[in-house]
Length: 245
Image (cartoon, rainbow, N blue to C red; front, side, top):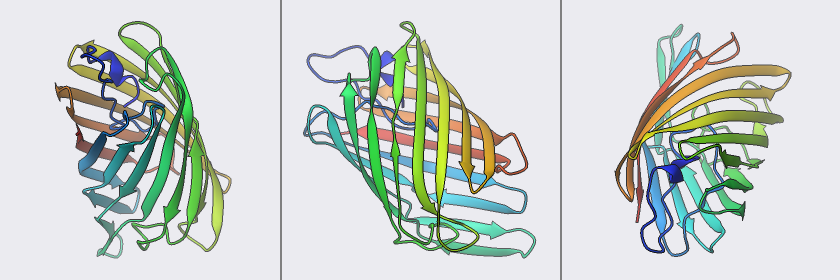
C-alpha cells in the first residue's frame, strides 16, 4: 500500500515493507532484491445492479530483482459470478497478470516516489471472471509525504483490455487519487477517489481502507468501495493479508 513506509521504523539496513493492498491505486515502492511477498485477498465481493461477484484467493506475488525493480504475478484461482435475474451462478478461474514495477525515484516509497508498472494479461480464465482475451497496460504511480503522518498518492493508468459485453479490446483509462493517514505506528487509513473510462462510459467510485501492521513483515487489511453513478458497481467489500519473506 502506498505510504505504508510511514508505519514502520527503519530496522538496520532492511527496507520497510510496503504492501500493495488494500489500495485501489498502485505504489512505486519495491521489494528489495532477494526477497518476495505474497498478498492475498481473504474475501472480495462486488455487487452491481443485476449481479454479484465473489473472488476467492486473488493473490499477488512480488519478487525483488534489483534495488529498483520487482516482478509481479497476479492470479485469481476461482471466482463466482451470480446473475440475479436469471438465478444462475457461474464459477471460473481468473486471468494471469504478469508485470514489473520500476521505481524511478525512492524505491522505499519515502518522500517523493514515482515509477512505472507495465503488465500483460494472459487469458487463462474465461468470462465472467476472466476477461476473455489478451490485454496490456501501464501504471505511473506517484506518492509524496506531506508530513510524517500524511501521504498523497496518485495512480494514472492506461490499458488495452477485452470488452466484457462484445468482442475486441478497448482503451481503458483510470485515475486514482488517494490520501494515506498513519493513525498510529501500526495502523493506516486510506481514502481514495477513482475515475475510469472505457468505450465512452465513465465510472466513479470512492474507497476507504484500513491496514494493520502485525509485524515488520505481516499486514492485515479490510476496505470497501462504493459506486457514485449508474455505470459503476454499487458496492465492493474486501479484506486480505500481506506477508513478506
